[in-house]
Length: 479
Ligand code: SF4
Ligand code: SF4
Image (tube, rainbow, N blue to C red; front, side):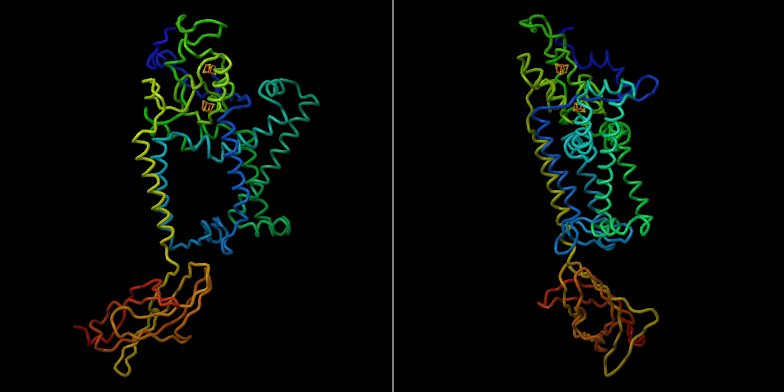
């Protein structure tokens, strides 16, 4: 095969791999993947990344900021905390906006950086490759030993190893489900449920069993099928990536003309490419694909094939990087990876999006106030003043207790009185309801119904929130 073999030619000749999923045979039966244990520069870096992320996952439910959980998504009791900040139904527009920004973020990120997230940050990859797979290697050994064990009859060794593996998997699934449950109801509640037992909390107990079952099923059996067949983000890759997207790619220009290694042979002179067809990149792949077939949806950019190929290249004395992070355009032009202007601009836009989300997050204010006239109430006219009663609702979004006063911002000369005094005390993250009377001089009233603006001030005189409401006056005054 000539070294000038192009990608187009490769596609014409080998396009059949796109007609099937790498982990299924022709009858549609699952082909179990036994990836070889990866090792190398990228694997080490990915291991460290996953240890940090796993540490965060296990520790975060116990972290509190000013007494609030760092992260709590309690859909049942409608309690939401993000970075220790309480979120109320009133704040959900921020979350909706943040969701829209996230979609834009993901799209730009994927167009430029490909599936970096899948390989380095996705919880499925982290748990699968850094927890469950490692346990499998520990109990059953590397690829060849696992394959041998799979073929062997159910003798005492196989029963012992499989029983141990499945028990450890189950144990870890139980731990993960408990931690996940802590993100929903809080760690105090989970510990209480555990101590009081299933008889007291049958619904929670069933939920935990379902959670555990799902985790066990996903990591013990479903595995790479989540990435290759189920994950919607994986499905999106086809429309988001282009020739300028960074991905784990095989340098077909350098590698093709693949042929077995022969010591002391001048491969160039013999018209051979750098790929020695050793299959190490294939046997190491956790999704069971051959990266040499080009960009594929199944590739989660886990970098295992980069490490495997680099190791081979070093052994045979060829330059590393036959499989590497690159764009298709770079490989076609045989250029080195560059941080292009497109990447710089995209990274800048991504940072802007992150900054804007952070700004929205911080700009929620520490107080939300509402003044509503009770149904059926009217005005009182006395001593040259018109008085309306309003029901107020104050939501203290901060951790601190606050003492607030209410003032009429518009029109001028408005007065406030409250049956409970003019200083209202609200505990941190709590809501306070009550009544206030607002009085305006009759000469300020221009319409039967007119707008008034009320402000809520903290004890230092800082305006925390304002609210426009409708003030009712005598009908005869209407102009
Ligand atoms: S590991 Fe490298 S040399 Fe071996 S088959 Fe894969 S691409 Fe070719
Ligand atoms: S092709 Fe390489 S990067 Fe992609 S999933 Fe397989 S081993 Fe990982």
